[in-house]
Amino acid sequence: MKTGLSKAINNEFKDESPFDNIDTAIALAKKLKIIDLIDANGRTVATLAEIINRLQNAEFEILDTNIGDFRA
Image 1 (cartoon, rainbow, N blue to C red):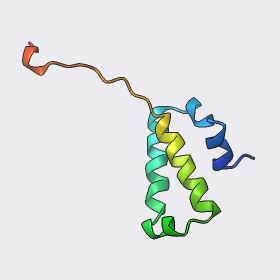
Image 2 (image 1 turned 90 degrees about the horizontal axis):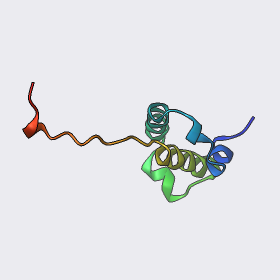
Image 3 (image 1 turned 30 degrees about the vertical axis):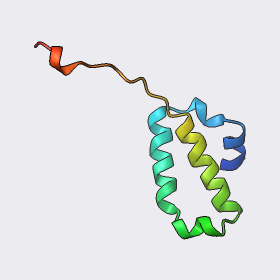
Image 4 (image 1 turned 90 degrees about the vertical axis):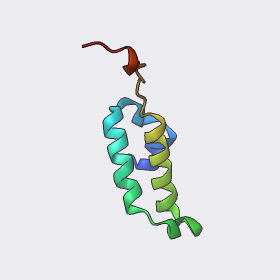
């Protein structure tokens, strides 16, 4: 079984849906405390790597909607 760090290093989160990546990144970020970053251990670094890689792979297409020209 691969760890989150090894999946992040190998960019394996690209295969997951953008919504899953964002939801999981938010859930992981809520578990971290800012103070953990000052003296980060291996688990904290692995979690940060997973969060960053998930957000890098959460691609959305931005649609250009000109509301001023919209006619119903």
